[in-house]
Image (tube, rainbow, N blue to C red; front, side, top):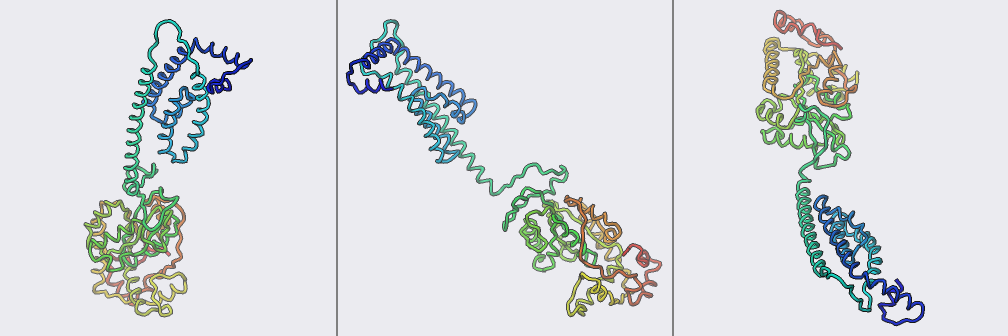
Length: 455
């Protein structure tokens, strides 16, 4: 390097140093043109291999090819520019520092090569056949470089366009990989994206929508507290007890959409880790008034239906009359409670004995059973489970089946609610003799012994 710099300065030197340089010049003279031609041929082969590699593996392969350690100063510039073009779109402008550090390691040996070959004294050409002109090779190299530029710019443009399309679709789509559910249950598995909060680490956990369809005083309140004792189940009560939410089918659908988007915030909502989300819907709260539209919505939305009724409709009737009385009498310190959480409160409410109208008793029971039958017939195309209050009382394994139906881990469910009317029927009705006489000999005589209810 020192000898080359002296030569470029053009200062004649004498002594041993000058003789060493003169010997070096003579050794270079014979092989100068051959060496230059070989360098150009190597560079041309390098460009060709670069084009083949890029065609097969994309422009990311330039990083691998750049280990040539800058065979030519022209290639240094090409590699430097393309390293920037490839690195910056993927890693930001901070990558320029890393690229420049890498290129700087190549510049020094390249400059040594340039200074060494560009001797200040004219070198005599070797005799023999003429070699291909160097400008022709340089032109081919430049042509290949332009071709590489063209291909690269096309790829960058296509990648940018693809990224914009993905970015436009990202807010509307939420893709979670491989929910492990049977194929027949896939229409009932959802990945909701609430607007009011983020589901965080549970955002890719599937959620199943459900609705509990029941009638007042059929054990639905107690059943719902059992479900809510599960850490992954959220049942949000009677959302259609407000008339404005069920004025027409539009208001019903609007309410349902908000609920099943998981934007319905109640004390029962386990927002982030909910695996089953639903509510309780009574038959007299618009459910049967728009049954065709509601059926279509439930099937389209993928909502599972749990029908919860009471087999002993006589006991249900007694509970309805007692609850209506307490709504006016407010026996618990001036407050009305449909459900209680202590034995003392349950005993106070159970003291009231309603009197049944025996003249309409049979027709009332028949109407209730027909109402339940019509409901089951109207919604027989849904994914559903028919459950009876007496089944839960007799066999707690019924709750395991409910959890399997909702696709949540099975565990023991508990409730703090205390049942109110647990005594035998003769102790619950004021005119029991009349009731017993009226139902004996009818199809509803099975309700008299209370054998279908176990405390």
